[in-house]
Structures are given as structure tokens and as C-alpha cells.
Length: 53
Image 1: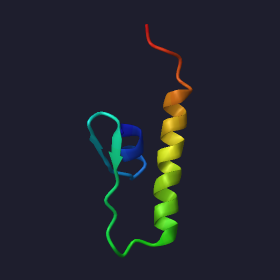
Image 2: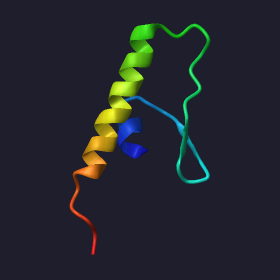
Image 3: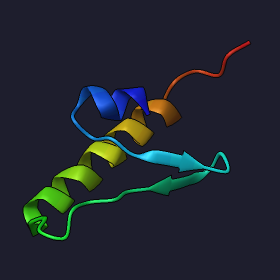
Image 4: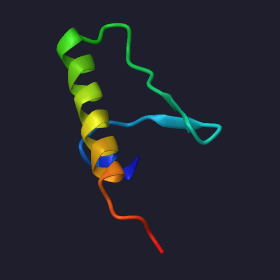
């Protein structure tokens, strides 16, 4: 979540595993694509981290 926020994407987590994106009704397709690219990048970074412990 903080990785995405540092890239300009804010979202809310619900029940620990549900991502809520709430864009304005006037959002452009390019902005949606950018938000999803940021989210994809952040999730890939987290998945590639070595396990803790």
C-alpha cells in the first residue's frame, strides 16, 4: 500500500485482501491504466521479495 502511495496511487483495503479503488466519475482511461500499472508494479515487487524469517 505504501509503495503505491509513494507513486501517487491511494486505495483502501477491506477485510485484509479487498482493494477498493474509488476514482472520480471524470477519470480518463489513461489515468485508470496508470493506476492499474502502479498497482501491478507494487504487487510484483512484493511478490519478488524474499520471505521473512
